[in-house]
Image (cartoon, rainbow, N blue to C red; front, side, top):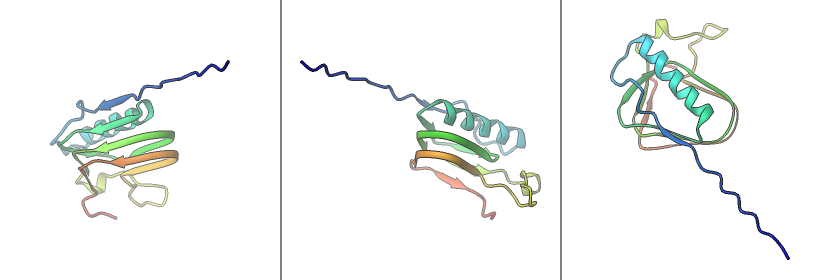
Amino acid sequence: MYLLLLIIIPVLSITLNNLVPDDISIPTAEFNSEIIKEALYIFDEVIIPNNTYTIYPVYVSNVSDITFKIDGTLQSQNNMKKWPKGDGGNSLHMFNFKYIENITITGDGTVDGKGYK
């Protein structure tokens, strides 16, 4: 006689309704980035709702099996003089994913770096 064991693991999903839209200030950009970063560590699916959100760099490392659904617009902060710089003095990327496995970025939204490189 064989016993079949079925394990169901629920997907933890969140829509980030607590992001602050339509505000390009640096404190708001920092707040939005921190909310996104923390959600990517905790949940299996993170959804950015349909609106425009200003962000600062988002760093995420050592995560796996995540869906990042962008239905709104994530845009960089307008003042590049105040954008964080790396060791070489260059502007940091909007997103830095390090040591990740199986991340899916999807959705009908936009990532707008304002043309900066």
